[in-house]
Length: 110
Length: 153
Image (cartoon, rainbow over all chains, first blue to last red):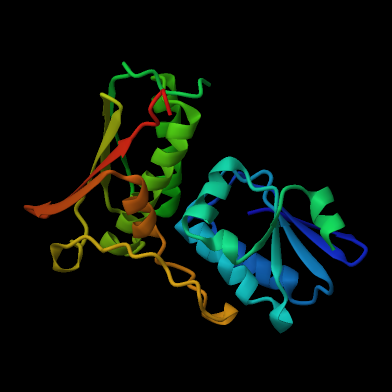
């Protein structure tokens, strides 16, 4: 599971450099997110543009990643592909996360 | 890839795999190649992949308790606008031999109480038009019907 972190001012962007967040990598994803987000200040955007498949384990890992962020920080999601968007809408998790259509819109949203 | 699966699409494919989540991942990759070669459209594959992934992951997690060495057999048959899946394993049967209800998760809770699991059966029951389970001579048999998107949708 490859995650790339970049910082742009007060905005942290974690890009998922994988096509799947599924049961095979869910625990790895959650653990890496815990390490990456432990000392981040500012907004945290999770760029999902490359992810074309997420299952219930992967969805649970994204929820867990937000819950384990320090001081009640929120995880914002960016650029959901069609299949990923469908899973978030079906489970109503789209009502829990702030979701942006692309990085430019996410950064402008402030 | 076409937007719709042609209504006359017919195929049957049987694959087997082991009992780990990476075995499931490889099986889904092989199935994607097989089914799309037979004409299954991308949108139909997305739905089918999700239903199959949830069903297969349940077998890995609960029937085989994440232990390698188990076997899973999956047959997909497509005809008349429906993909029928027949999924068999020799692991632990479902509790009381019954399918979980798959009720939607309660999200009206504080952040720290949000559910991190329990979405799988809800998604299966939302996307599949028929789900049946039986255990026959030590073999768990799960049957799922996934309707294709009609061409006039």
